[in-house]
Figure (cartoon, rainbow, N blue to C red):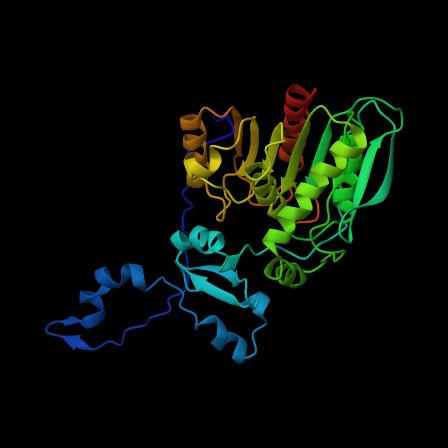
Length: 345
């Protein structure tokens, strides 16, 4: 079901008073000035701000981060080299899904953190690093008191297994879970968007899937779990769904604005509930793609809760970004805790 957070599409109004980029001379056309005759047809194009192609702007000394697209175009980064490209807005989602383009996100910052937003659960926790797959070292958080707790595989964003994800593992563990935050980047952590892009570009999806499946096996073997789920943000959100598509031992899947699959044949292997958290303004994981995802889940009778938060963009739950939305993040986290409580305990 779709939650009340979804609102109809917002159409941005173009600001008035834009400078004229095309100026006609006062040539005579019959008994009138040519610019008078053509003023009606030029009323739209005359207000469009034209800019050279991104590579030309860069060659002329513009920093890549300051490249500007002509009105009507949207800027993305090429995944292969990190250079900006101006594309039609309708193409952004397709290019991101195909792996040609990536979201433009600011560099990582420690200015904000989730400690102020998410309160602890009732359990005191302890944590340690564990080797769970080849040389991969994850971050394990769990209650200090021995007991039977559900397990959760936590999957990081494109930044890697950083302090923010470790803190989220501690937070979730305090609600009574054994949480293994996996490392899909072999110990590498990015702090700039370009570093993150390079890590995504070199990511081995097959090895990553083996990594996550090994995390499930590690938790089951070491903690005799009765139930297990997964949660991930952005890149990790897509991987949370990918794990669900390739591991039948799961009992719950949480996706924060991750890449979606809408093919009924692929999704038909899922036999447990899904929680999805999305952003209305996300141009990569669009509202339309969420609706398609929902339609397939309904067709397959897969239990789900999908929420689209109005007025926020991709990665709104990441405290390091300019698009961080504290209230929406808090609400989404509360829904996550409630969902896991209902389906894993």
